[in-house]
Length: 139
Image (tube, rainbow, N blue to C red; front, side, top):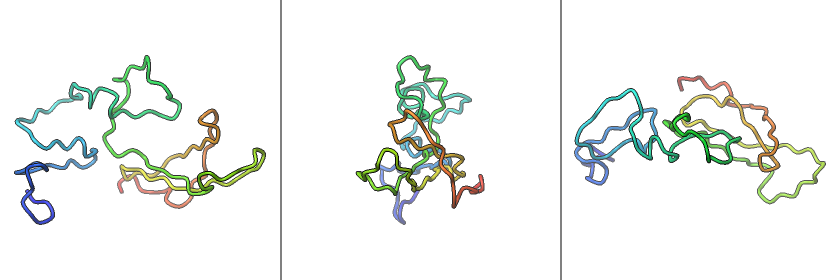
């Protein structure tokens, strides 16, 4: 009913907006006429189409995939960044380098694994996780 101490404006769902913990913000619908509970996803491109599906790094093309076999994104997907080496750095092909960065799980769970590829996904290497790898699943 309020946003930043003021009555919630119509473009943000006035008179009330429900935020559902554990679900991405796009699923926090602003204007409702009725609510229906169901044990399966709603029909439509947002839930059953490709818009919010999650695919692993081995999926490079969705042609021929049965999209209903893939779970929809309910939480913010894992975000990650490589901090070293810097973008554009030149590395000798035979040189062994250390890649450093971070990964964050939007659901507050620990990062179970990080895979890194230096050849556009042809081969993958599993990273050694350090700080934060033991994040409690309930946090």
